[in-house]
Image (tube, rainbow, N blue to C red; front, top):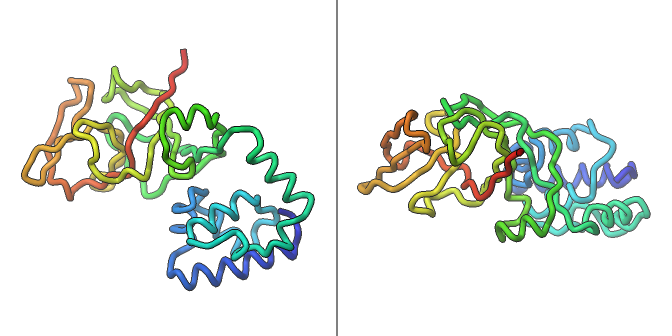
Amino acid sequence: MTSEAAIETLRFRLSKAIEYRGVSAKALARTAGLGETVVRDILQGMTKDVKLGTVEKLARALGLSLADLLPSALQATGALEAERETAYGDDTADIVSLDLSLSMGPGTLIEEFVESEPVRMSLWLIQSITRTPSDRLRLVKGIGDSMEPTLRAGDRVLIDISERALSRINGIYWIDFGGSHGIKRLRPAGSGRVVVSSDNPVAGDFEVAADEIRIEGRVIWYGREL
């Protein structure tokens, strides 16, 4: 979307929608599955090219229609229609990729994850793995050896961020424990407690109160180089 009129209209309407919803630019970007600076850059006039797919994600995250953020008259340009065809006509979906690896050994202390360029994945593959919409999936690269042999350093791990509760008796999750993020296996221990375990027996297990950890998503698939 390169029309100056379209960008200005989007900036104004997006600003009003954010104000009405009472959310921050960063929080909205995260909910929409976009890079954390995307909304800020639009609002501050730091970008002159916003993809139509980005506007659609923002509209969904705000509970609005595409037309609420961008009038139909400004959508129906040749450039936008070509962009829509490219984005949706090849049976693929863009998955948000995190360029700061999650730790599968000692937890990596971070405040925010930085997003890299999205990774295009086959819709057939995604739909064979999960029914979760692609904007609720994250692709990360694990490090460390605490989850071996199940997961190895360098594996590409697909995480469903819509699963933020302990939904599996013995599932693998992306967790935050005291500000430390990592990929661990969780299982209920009873009396409101959870066992946090590593598949590598050398790493050991520990037990915590369920409210001491925050589940950020569940690992649903991984890819490995030969």
